[in-house]
Length: 288
Image: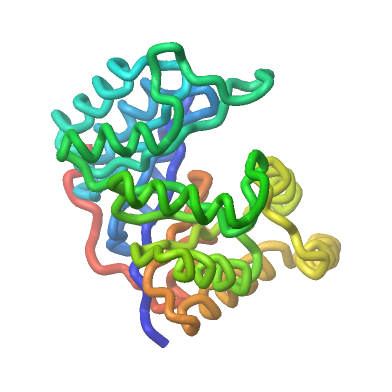
């Protein structure tokens, strides 16, 4: 089996304890030599400054290539591009460009009067800037706000046409979900790289709630398996086995890169990577 390249997503810490957990996560996963790591934004852009600080710190002290999330929510075009310039000044050349989730409790996304109306507009501006490698989101299952699956495919094509370089998908539970999406994208003329997003399940109840919010379906067999595993005290064993099997199926289907949503809890991600043949290559250097 081909050993895949990997990348990891982190979220920015909001307190001192979370800061230590993030750095512990970086230390555990950095030796696996990821292509890049990304740092998210909170809903409504609530962690904008935290994201900027986390990106700068990881970039400076870990030696890893860091991709900063950047969204259109609650900011003017000028403010959003100023943040992008801050990333560039800090030596960060990779951005994950997203529309972003609306603030919690709001009726839905509403563009700032002087802001970007969509991810496509943001991508166009970043591509014109010429400083960044641009990654974007993709949805193997229907986005909650999308009318149908084909609309998601067509929107992804618009993102690539606007200047995106790669796409990272929302997580899913069965390899066929990704393969159907990949085939639909190819049929639509998309030839760019689409990297499957993988969620190792640290907590099934939390994962199921997360899936509901982002439109990811949870197969009955997955729910049944975790219900039995939790009764028997085998949750982590099942989570590692199912995630490894999913990744193996993807690799056997021609996938060469995987993007892991770590939730800043690295152990399951590390164990799955080891099972796939992704092993430590070097120690983390320049630790502050």
